[in-house]
Structure formats: C-alpha cells, structure tokens
Length: 420
Image 1 (cartoon, rainbow, N blue to C red):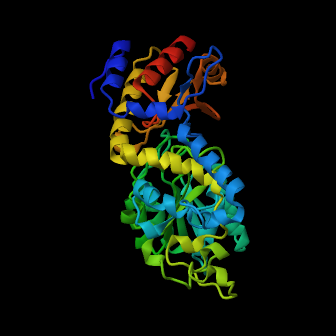
Image 2: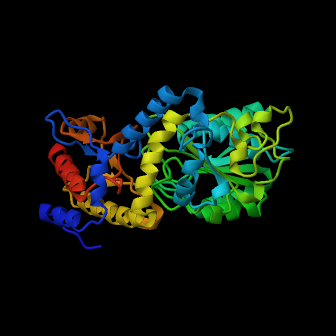
Image 3: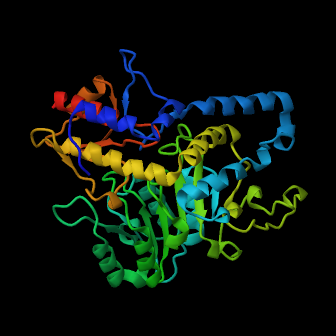
C-alpha cells in the first residue's frame, strides 16, 4: 500500500471511502474546545450508535405502556429479544445460527463454558493460555483450577514470547503440546491479544489442541467485530466475547457465546443450567427436569436484559448494512495508513509492537513508548486524543473502520509528533 504523510491525502482517502457515511451514525465525544475528539479507543469502549437512544427509549415506553405484556404482545417481544440479534451476530463471528447466543457478560460466559469444557481428570488437568492474557481471563482460569482442587501455579501453562520478542510464535505452542499434550485439558487463548494486538490463527490452534485430545476455546473480546473469526470453521469447542468494544453496545453491556454444533445435542455435558436454557415449548410449564434447548441457547440461565440488548441491536443493524467484509477491507487499509504515518515520525521513542502483516492483526496498533512514564499519553490526551494506556509502556490506538476516518489517523499522528 502506497501512502504519503500529506493532509490532502487523508482528505482524499476519506472522500473515496464508501463507508465514511457511517460515521454520522455515531456520536463522537467532544474535546474541551468543543471540537470532535480524536477517538481511537474502540478496543476499550465503542462509540454510541445514535439509534441506540431510539431503541432504548422504545423499550422504556413499551414497559410503561404494556407492563408485563411486553414479554409477548409487541413486535420485538422481550421473551424473544435475544433471537433478534442472533443472525447478525452469527454472521459477524462466522458461525451457524444455532451456535450463537447473546447472553450475560464476558467473564460469566467464560466460567459457564469452562464448567462444560474444562473437565480435569487424572493427569490431564492443565490449561494453556497466553503469558500476557487479559487479567480477567487469568483470574477465571485460576479460580476454575482451584475449584477442581488444582494448583494454578502448576496447572497453568503460559505460552511465552521468545526472548527479545513481543508476539507469540505458533511453533512454540506446538512444542508445548508435544511436551505436555497428555496433561492438558483445555487451551484457552484470546483470539486477539489485548496488549499487543496480535491476531492468532484460530483454526491452527484448534487443530493442534484437538490432535492432542484437548478442548479448545477462545476469548474473542478484542476480536468480535474487529477481525474475521470464522468460528464454525475453526472447529473450536467454544468462544466468548463482549460487545461493548468494537460492537458498540455500551459500557458493561451484554456479551456473546459460541458453542460448536457438534455439542448441540450433548446433554451429558455438565453445565450450570437456568430456566431460559430450557426447551422453549415447555419453559412456562414450570417442570422440574431440565431439558436444554439444542445449541448455544441451551447455556442460557435467565431472561434477557432488554435495555442492554437494545443498543447492540442498533449497532448490529449498521454492521449488516456496511457488510463485515467491507469493514475488514477498510480496516486493513486504514490501519496500514496509520502504521505508515507512525513509522514516518522522527526519532525512536515510538515502536509498534503489533505484527506488521495485516493477516496477523486487527485494527489495534500497540505503541511501546521508550522511557515511558505516562506523561506522553497525558499530553496527547490533553490535546484531544482519546486512546488507551496499558502499563508499563504501551499506548493502544484502534481506528475502528465503522466510524473512524483517515483524518483521525492523520490528526492523531500530528498531535503525537508535537507531543514527543
């Protein structure tokens, strides 16, 4: 991709961008001078779709107008509300309709999946995860191991970068499995690493794990809505993700869950059951014996949080209109443009630790700051950049293709340059 650092080029790229029209469908936070902030933090919290206000207000009005009848007597009936999200969500994560359900929040979903897919037995007790996995994943995995009477210090195997490198090498994972395969019960990896932005080959990881008799699951929090996941084709046993990052559902909002179709009718799998996972035809018969819905819906516990689901419905409509393949194509180009601008900066204080090959990353670029003390991040924040700092020395920036522009990237690098 051929770029230059002229402002006119950014303007021209935005004019040629067919997806630029979606920016006006979101609300951009304002800086103190009342201009739009340079918002590059969709990897932490996506922007609010404007229609989310309409959809939430509709549910509030229906609540006032209908009361409990809103569960049945309306177009988007509350008893079925999660179903109105399934097809779009399945398209985004590359799964079959019956393999996906929108429910709960991220870490609870991870726990519910490990109840079913982490079954330590004999010496097969260990879990493999990235050395720098997101802390919530580490806490969840460690607590599951303790629950089963294990020792996290012994039963977690951490996939480490090689000395002097920041990203992980698939050959090293293969080596771990070659040495410890018969001791490993589960491989649980973040599909896109939250810190480096590295996007892993999920199909290859699954094949490696299954060849050694391991279950395989993925935390797709930084991947859903960002990169093509093709979860069904990977063969993974399960995956979980939040929707408040690239999927723009609002702070702390609802999450998603994938269970591969080969487990759809396996009622012998242990699970923590709840009535919303019970056979829909019998749900209100109030029977004592649990009969799970085939597929991912059978892992539901409680009825849906409607006011959290309304914003994600607004966002998913925009994703379907834009087309995920189109968004991914723009993302690759937009992030490559940002990469070019960053590499064009003078000096050596900024180093991109995210892979330079587009197939190995999403839209996030992680910038290691030499001699960092967070002051540089604070300076760019004061000048209108909304990005993300991660200790000890990384600024994470993520141009989300559905609302970010080439001018956002140009403005960010200009502010960064003046602040170095």
